[in-house]
Amino acid sequence: MKPSNFKKWRKVTEFAIVGFAIWLNPQAGLPIFLLKLSFQILWTLQDKDDLQK
Image (cartoon, helix red, strand yellow):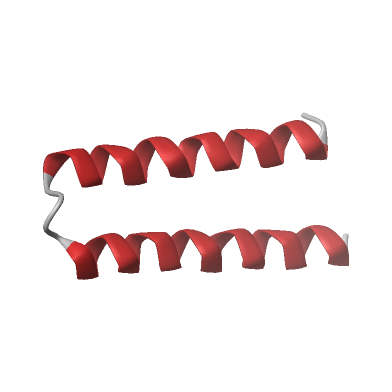
C-alpha cells in the first residue's frame, strides 16, 4: 500500500472509531480524549518507524 493511501485509511479509521464512540456516549469526554490521544501516539510511533526504514 502506498504511504499516502495508508495515511488516508488511518484517518478514516480514527474518524470512524472516535465517531462511533461519541455516538454511543456523547457525555464521555475523558475517555474520548484518551482514545484520540492514543491514536495520536500510535500514528507518531508508526511514522517514526517508517522514517527509520
